[in-house]
Amino acid sequence: MTSAQDGDGVAYAELLSDLLPVLHRFVRRKSRNAQDADDVVQEILVSLHTVRQTYDPRRPFTPWLMTVAARRVADAARRRYARGANEIAVDVLPETFQGDETKFEQEASDVAEDLRKALAVLPQSQREAIELIKIRGLSLEEAAEATGKSVGSLKVRVHRAIKAMRQALEQKS
Amino acid sequence: MKSEDLIRSLIDDCAPTPPLAHPGWRALVWFGAALCYLGLVVHFVGRRPELFTTIADPWYLAEVAAMFLTSAMAAAGAFCAGCPGRAIWERFAPLPFLLIWIGALAIGCWRDRHIQGFPPFANISTIQTIAAMSIPSALAILSMVRRGAPIAPMTTVGLATLAATSMSSAVHRVFIEQNMAGSAGFWPFCAVLLISGFASLFGRRLLRWTTRDEFVATVQRPS
Image (cartoon, rainbow over all chains, first blue to last red; front, side, top):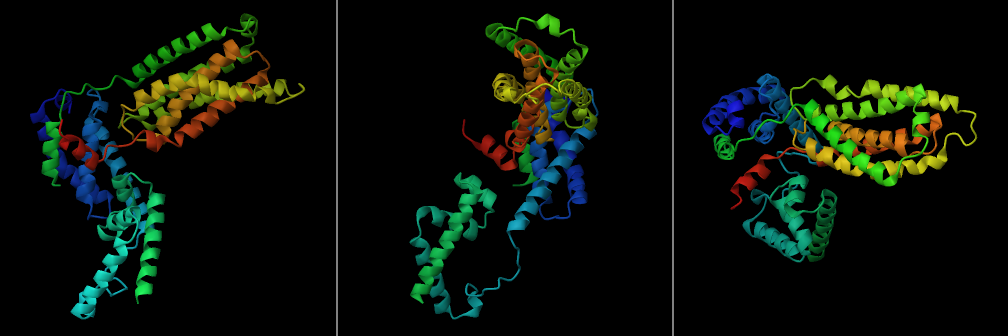
């Protein structure tokens, strides 16, 4: 790390490559969710890189490394918990109107067309919120970051958009 | 993104980065600079006339010394909190001096308990004065702690603000405050606690990690 602080790319490459399996093991041991272990490890690598000036060469390396890693694992757990509090993950959707196997080909096409039309008449801001959160599957935080709007404002937009689309579909039926 | 690709981006961004100076040294630099700034404030505002007669009171002296030491230790604690791997107890370094300050203040309030108008509500404007005096030194220490790691952002910002406000309140109490009753330190103390507590709530906004996506966006941005 001392060489990396001096700008030695070769030493830095060696260090990061050596750290990768160590961090993977650490994250898997600390986190129950193995799915996003890669993401957490990458976040730790970026964190180590951005705060490398805080490493004091006169002090041991491992406590410095593990403090950053533990903090980032805790941040990831907090983020996951916050996301889980607002979202429900289900394997099978309770509504089947979008499942093509549940209806004739023409019906499926009609439903999709109706939804497209209902979406098209929404104001731009509400349409953008629906596209990001409900179609592309971004979390509220990610959508807020992409649009520059607050999470609260996005929630309101999604709520209003769904209400407007429901009314439009009810009127049509 | 694969981890190997990310590592390549990190290596490409590996410019020489000298390690930060020791937290104690950085605290000393900030303390000296903040003291110089507050010296200028006193120079322009003017100091109260009977300064040397009141400073002879040992309880008053203990209170003022505790304020200055709280400031210095809080600054050191804030800088230590931004260095991963350092001992947790370093963040509690200002606590003994804060307790001495509270003790001296309590004795002052006890001695003045029969004075009419206790506690001195007229001095409530002290909170605004100390907040205004603290702004430059608080901004200076916050810009310095931002170079550290956001390991404990709320604690770091709280300690940094405690350092700035307790020094301002000490200077205010010694050189500017006209009311020399022991209980007059009540509002400076409230100001320090209120402002530091409030500032610490913004810790996560002021000090945060660079995320992978932000880093990737930075390195991919055409120069």
